[in-house]
Image 1 (cartoon, rainbow, N blue to C red):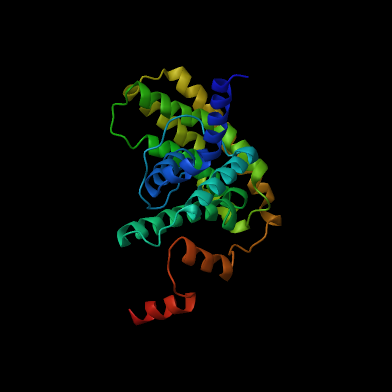
Image 2 (image 1 turned 45 degrees about the vertical axis):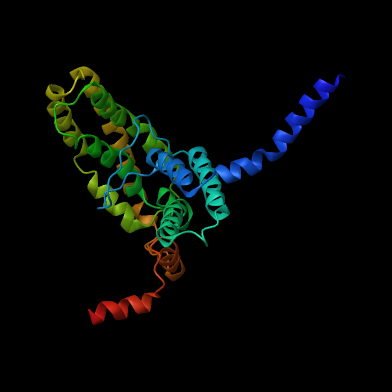
Length: 269
C-alpha cells in the first residue's frame, strides 16, 4: 500500500470518528424545531377542538399498529435530540422556545401513550375521517385540481382508517362509544348531499365521487353497528385519573400547580 493510500484511509476513518461530533454541533433548537414540525404536520391527528389548524401535506393517513409504533420511534428520536441540547446559557427567550418544543413533544407522548385515544375512543376515528374531510372542505370554492384530489383521497381513506380503528380499539368506555354511535346517525344521506354539492365546484366526476362516498358510508355504518352491538358490555369508566392529569399539567401545559390549586384559583376568580 502506498503512503498516499494509507493517508486516504486514515483520513476517511478519522472523518467517520468525528461525524457524530459534527452532527451534534450542527443540531440546534432551530433545526430540531423545523424537523419536528415537518413531521408533526404529517402525522398529527385531526381534531374537532379549537386548537389552531395546521397546513398538512396531502395523501393517505395510516393509523395501523405498525404506523403508530413508527410514530413512537420517531418521537423517541426527537426527544433524545431535545434532551441533548444545553439551554442553560441561552438567552431567556430561546430557553422559553426550548420549553415550548418540549411541550409539543410531550403532547405527542400524551396522544400516543398517556391518553391513547387511538385505542380507547371510537370518536378518535370519526375525527380522522369525517373531521379530516370537513377540514379539506373549508377552503373557499371553487376547488382546483390538487384540492379536488385531496378531497377525494380523504373520502377514499375512510374505510381503511375505520378498519384500523376497529383493530386498535380495546374495550372503549361506553359513554365514548355512545357518542360515536349517535354522531353517525344518518351518515349516508349526509355524505350523499356532500357529494352532490361538490361536483359543480371540483374537478371530480359524479360517478367517481359517488362510488367513493358509498364505500365510505358502508364503512361508517359498519363501524357504527359494531359499537352499537358492543355497548351493553362496555365499561362505564372514562377518566384516566389524577396521575395522568398531573402529567398533562406538568409536561404539556407547563403549569406548576396541583389540581387543588387550580380549583382554588377558579373559585377565587
